[in-house]
Image (tube, rainbow, N blue to C red; front, side, top):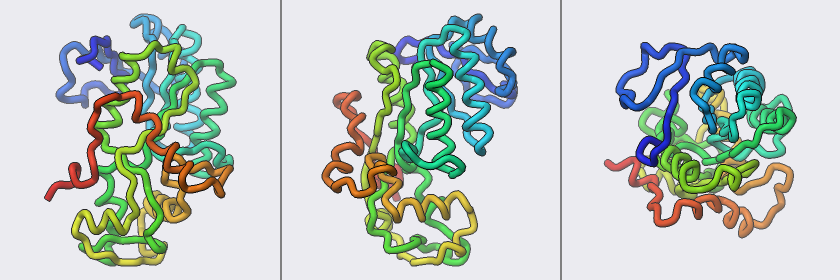
Length: 265
């Protein structure tokens, strides 16, 4: 953002813990749940765009994040970018992990603030985390058959893309858009081959982290491809392929990082 001429303000619960922040970036210590306290800070800095990267439980996604959107709306912020980074959550049911972000998206409409939602699939950097389990040390863990494609996108590509579109397109052109990014599509079998890892087919209970277990189970159903639509599970594969990564077009000439690029030996 700085490289593209944007003025950046970083809001944090404890700015004293932040290191290596470039000098031009302004810092503000805030309580994310204090809408009334954040509102004047949005006004103070004449904020046009709020990018929310808060992660956490249902409350953070559906209450804290929506509260920030309300404060942003009242402060005259033009565009709110929620934490949609990850799997496409459209139409997932209320009360589920993926449904929380979908519920938040509906709440933003009620708030009345324009949003830019960016779905990225799984972070490429997280592959070692989602493929390891203590019961099979050194192996590449797969639940199911592992022949369903995931969308993977590298974190530098995600951050770079977000900065690019926010500074190269009129904000009004981004209003209420849901962009689908994909650095590389690959099955878990293909990922294991790329990394030179031996595959271990495991039972769900062998994966201790509940989030990873759900992610692997979702992926086996095809839900981790950003072009997949939960409400239209029978969509032809060709259309899913076409939708996945359709948002990449807005960053012309960019070379997206592959799994091999990120996990070089």
